[in-house]
Length: 163
Image (cartoon, rainbow, N blue to C red):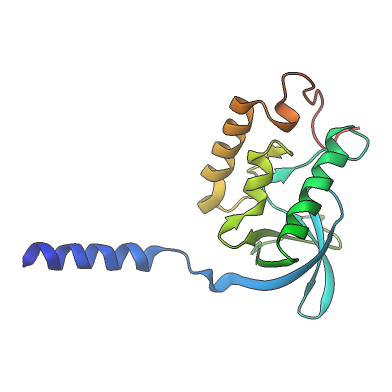
């Protein structure tokens, strides 16, 4: 009987320590502006949101920049534009007209999915600690599988976002 009580207590503690999804808000994503930026409607206002943790190539970094935007747009279309958004609690300096956040489709972190598919580099500078390991592993997977910017046939030879 004591063992059962201990297991129940441990299970309760594990569930209690999970970060709540109450920080997520339901949003309608209007479109992809780039491989790591979306335009969405939040609280009745159209806003630009940069996806934290992924640095996608610019449009002039062909073919990767346009491919990253096309992939993000495809994810948006697949989901009927319905997502949940977890905003970054502290905005990075110089964020201007952009908000920063984590975009979720069902229980899939889209930011991480893009890195895993090789649509950009993992950038963990502003990533919440609870997600940092996911981004590092996603990039390691993309490199190992040689997908997207990590392709052996046509790798990206300059930093995403570079000229």
